[in-house]
Image 1 (cartoon, one colour):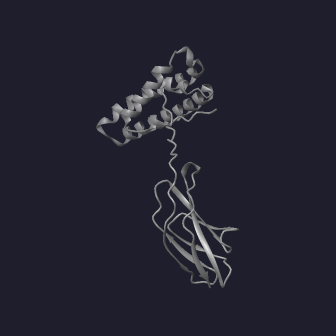
Image 2: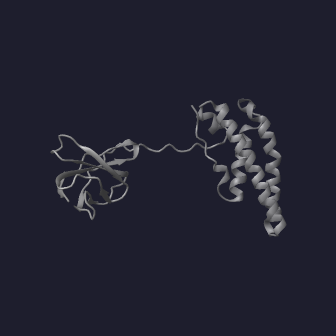
Image 3: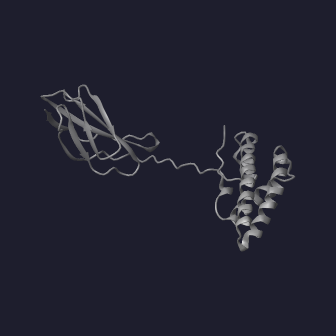
Length: 206
């Protein structure tokens, strides 16, 4: 199982980057648990020193010194990316290996098991074109990503899926003309959640 490590060492000020990289080197250099990483750690150590010196030299400004600082940062972070990849490989799914090496894990999203509320209608009307209707729902509640629209001609003995919408308004097309149709909507949300169906709305299709 792979683990998901962030690139937090790339974020923040130059001082933050220095501190993050030093933390990784401090925890991995000449440490038996991380012997597989030592070769790459040895590559990073002089680059980190060069980066620190370049940042200090550019403190008073100057185009060439600023360019040197940016170049040193790029070289350091490129090698840190390689080290991060090696950590993922040698960790073999062990998250403690990564954190003990000074890296941060991406936070896992907290699963929301709360049920989605039922969709509520604002309006439904015949569409401009034959065989269409237009619907409007109340504002999507938090956690809803789309709404599925379905319809039936026989009082929901059989039902047909019509369309999906990611907004409050939708157009249902391809309906049989000169017939009464009933329409329901179901919310779909994060973490594979679904709501109960909305109230059924009946309308005559032109």
